[in-house]
Image (cartoon, rainbow, N blue to C red; front, side):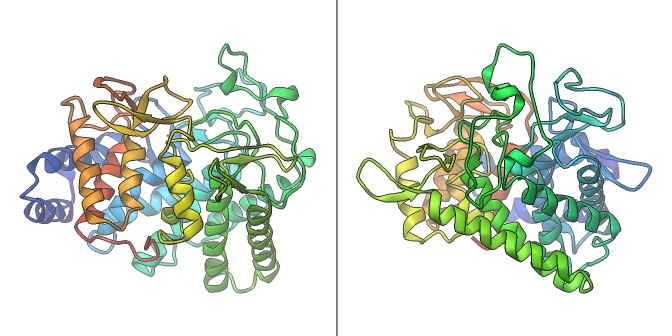
Length: 432
């Protein structure tokens, strides 16, 4: 999609935002650059009507990233038929790919054997990477649900969608008892976070009702394989799936019953196994648990994380347990929380120590009820962009000119989502 081919509704929407935010030209520099960049440089329309979305400087489409990249364009779905078709194309592509392999997290544009084909797992030519992450299955359901809520268009709920949804339910059911899983993953690498131990099975777990994840949304392996934020996300999207099945597939009563049972069992597992005590003796959510008594108190910048629980639709901002968890994650008790002269925020194992992530700053704003905090996060993101008019993966807490990933569309679009949120733009079905 070139600039000349932009639907007029996109230009009208951008003009609307530029008028609304005229008192913050520094925000608009980033908004204008990246709202166009994702449309023009990451979106690739396919001959079959689907939409392929590059993550940025890695030539692959992540199920997770592409959902987040496209989400702000939902505000245009009722204004522009072209944007509506683009989003529908992403949804169709998502569920095609999930039906091919629900354990894959990233896909090639064509079956060209690009990506990590030497990994010891069941690779396919269309698969770029096969690190199994719960959120890779949750995000596409979220996008489909939000599109439906925004437009009332049920045409996306076709056979492709149903087949993909069935694959998601079946995978999460199987992974409630990982010993029964067909999934194994090993990579010949110096970086331990990129491979699973125990012959590709991962560290031991007990059955908890939660569903197992091999990797975090950072694409780094879990230490304990019940990743709590991702299980929270699963509970939320299973609720969405219940609504979709009731409305669009009323004949699928068995699948609806399984969906409800899975949602309730995972949620009960979170309540029983994932609530632990911080150093002050207060109940908070753990980040990862194994059902054997081990857990981590930390949070990673990648989303889903614990900070994002209200954004994911699992809880509310004012929930006391969430607020205690939030306070703990913005403290030294979280090993990925860094305070520096340029910024304070959450980082990740995926980047060097002392590197804060722009998407974590955006999520802090998106999960705040304080408009002043939202503004503070937008200002901080602008101040740490290293004069590139783009967000990055991580940047050094004392020197934002030290950063990782020149072109990373996900945090770019989270900046835009936070900016739109600041000015009162809310998606139906996504109220935080």
